[in-house]
Length: 620
Image 1 (cartoon, one colour):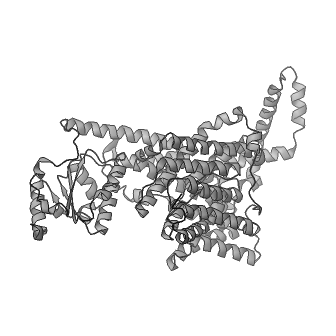
Image 2 (cartoon, rainbow, N blue to C red):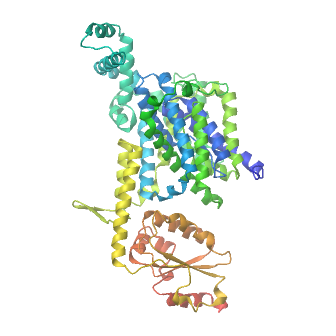
Image 3 (cartoon, one colour):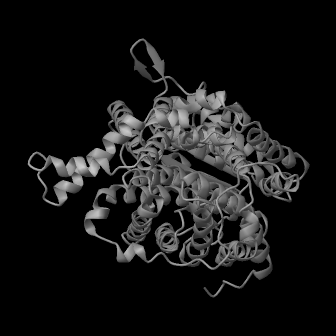
């Protein structure tokens, strides 16, 4: 805390800029979640402030994110459906789940589990992030077309028979709870059934219609109906928003294009008095705690959602710590993973109490903060305060924002969150798995499995299945390699036998590093620290790779990042003893020869020494 005010000017500018960038996203994520724009704004305010204050990444800006919102949307829809479609009735349970998720995150941090996040392999993360993008894209197509299933009466009417069944089932459950035996007192059941109004049936039908069209699969099913009843004004507002977001970036990046799109398109809609659909009203007063979380709490009401809360906690942990790694790479610092989880948990817990949706570390907002001058926790706290000031001063104004504009913003978020690096690598990766008559890369298989299961089934189950498949495949590969080289033993970091005659006058300029064992998703964190071990005086780095038998996709990209970093510093890298599989992987994405030319690859250390002596003659 002593360094909190060491960079006030930079932190103020970084925090204010990040807060402005966060505003349209917070509103959009709130609407997308199903709880409305206010929930998104409250989440952004409290998570940003408290996660920064108590977290372990100095420059991180937190708030609602695409992955957290995608899961929250499913959680919220499910709980509302079990509460007769009544949002107010379901809200205490929803917020209790969010609060429980925050407390679980605190527990993960206290137990020291943050360091294990690094063991999630790249294909799993790639498939997951691409699925998040696909889900957001599909779910925002309907509102961008101006189609809302609950308002399509022809569609809603098809659910009336099912609605009557649901209502009758609820009557039977009520009677069972009251100890009434239906077969003995059937008249009571009939009396209650006769009291059901057409309004109640319509409301239940609308709930079922909305549920049927929710999620990625629901959006696909409802798409033909949406096309038949396009609201052209809403579509033009959404397309105009998308056009400005992408177009304005080509003019300048000094002003967030998302904010420009929000202001311009909303201004056109309001200024010309267009008959558009606005977002829900945003209250202009101070946020008030929702005490129903505590007054209506019961173990029985929350028990069915314990695993759901754990899902959110784990996803938030992964999302935040991945962003922390990005921040580390940009600032050349080292975050504290367990402290970061505690901070995120506190932020999510407080946000839940005030009615906000959960969030995590936000990569884009964190990058904006760093590039704008943010260096300490103060920047994240300022971002939260900035959003609170906007809420208090501009709440009624923000309520006039068209819903289609936020749908357009979310479509660009969905496009941006996909992992294009992983998708582009699909044709280049080695096909080492045979499925029937087809051969494909094991990395690609994992990514596709996670992508499909996440999009059309369950996000967290998909990640779990992806981890199991990745682990089994990794164990098989390592088992095969161990069988081939069963004499390999663990070695200490010390000079190898053929390095004994290395000229002492070169040791300051030539740095030798031994890599022993596979470079895979579990070892990339330690490998990334290699750059920090290199002395400032070094001009050449020799990587001895004769005992690195295997490299997976995570290791491949870690190697690429390190080589690019050294290349920027003007440090030459040479390989000694590069084995077949790692060489093949690096050739597939052109690390060889783009970053490491073939003349920098040697089979034996003596050959490498000859090259060193020829290229650093003045030191011999």
